[in-house]
Length: 161
Ligand SMILES: [Zn+2]
Image (cartoon, rainbow, N blue to C red; front, side):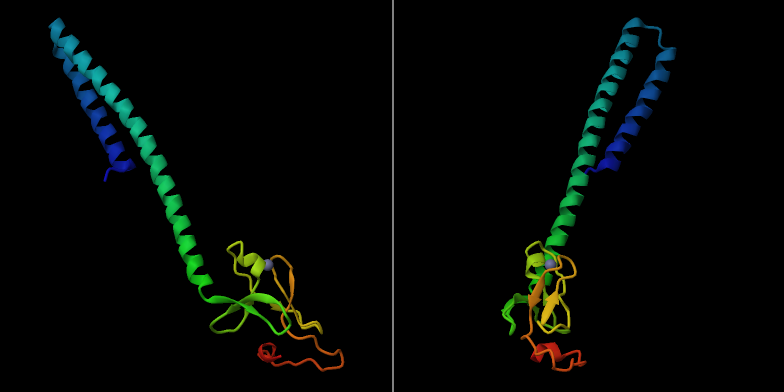
């Protein structure tokens, strides 16, 4: 496949041929031959101009191709990541995405809709709320607790409460 560099190589080859043809004209005295050489030089110049246009177009297409590859890669990464989450209703009546592996956590459904995974953080409050660090949305993940209940320091406790 021809790329920007091979197009540049052809342009440089044409330049080299132009130089040789320009040098050859010096020893030519015949007017007809000189006219033919000048015509050939003009043709080479025209072809070189066309190649410059092709090279610019190739560069544009390669950049676009690279950009699309990046987008596809991001899309595939997102598809793989989101497959690990499922929408659940928590005990506190929140509807959030739950990670299906370890460590257990929830993801913000609002950010999920924008193809972003944001892990909800336990606010350790009596309302049993978890907060999205990105959009600051609060979700009642756990069942509301009485204020007199001592805080449970067990890190895995939010799953069972
Ligand atoms: Zn969010």
